[in-house]
Length: 481
Image (cartoon, rainbow, N blue to C red):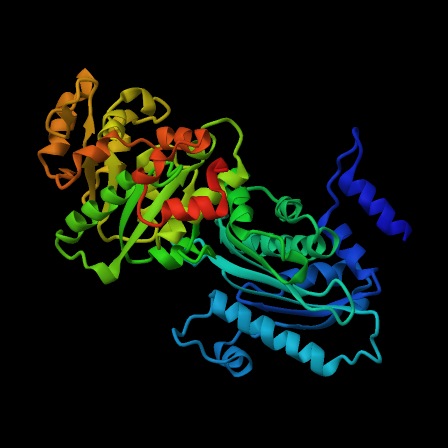
């Protein structure tokens, strides 16, 4: 009890003391808790997490078993063979957790351990390769109880290593695993703090957490999309992704070796303009050589700066946007990429196939404004080298100017110093106009729709795609009353 009180003071601190407990202190606190008891199964990077608990002392009261099924045949014999023959996958991790949890139920009886809070910790990881071309990544998970005989809760996350040494990556994994177990048992009722504590005694230059999901009775009120938003907001990753079902998904899994068409916007709310931009640009995209629908992924992207358009991020407003886009069957990306070239760089991590970017003419004009590239040592040429490399094309949606004239890629006005550069990209086929559009849709703006919704003016309903206005009214989205 005295240790618990002392540790809480160390971790929470007061107005003057905000000391983070060491990894050893965390492991020791768990070891000295008579009720926390479970198993460790680690593949690929050694037994790095359980090692922290062995070294801290008192491990016999915490560790029921530790295993490292390093050999693939042994791993397959224990956990089964994966259809895709891969080992560093979420599916493999879940099989590990399922198997180890079933063994706890089978081998540790409640008559002998009536007060124990059982857990199974697992990871499956690939560290940096010898040539240092692949930095490594992994899946880490914990299944745990907070009440004896209670249902299990679960936290599963995907990480990417940033360090260039396998030994350092192994040590980072051990610290992360200890942080996960510690925060799960002592901060389970504060998921946002769990995210924060995962980086205790680590920094964001060591690893990236790009996907996390909470499940189980203790997390029944947790919306994993909001948790993922915190990953981007907290600088733990550059981007997170949601499936049309509204679930967190690993971007690498969705984007790997795909042709990608991305549409950036505020989608507050999604309007007929957005749908028209998508429908017409996907037609143009599919006309390109070697672009097939079944090998193409469409992504609706919202930047963090868009979410902060009115100051701090409104979480309900964020959820409203995500719900509408998912209801239209779209995959949603939340990113911290203010500049388009960074978005293209991100996609290029996962594919060498075609990339299409759909944007309004106003955004295309902004891209050719040199003031946005002063922070780059190579200036605008460096940015454009990344944005307009050989597999990228921009699909430009027109706009109406103040005189009611249509502005497209042929008659837009860019910064005077950028005219020749723009012509180079335009006439080398890097920019293509969306020509099949309804001119009346050019008068629709999300910000005006939002004002009409808040004022109670029903005109907004005609500006939205089929079904969207109904969903807004049924779920009282965007302040509808």
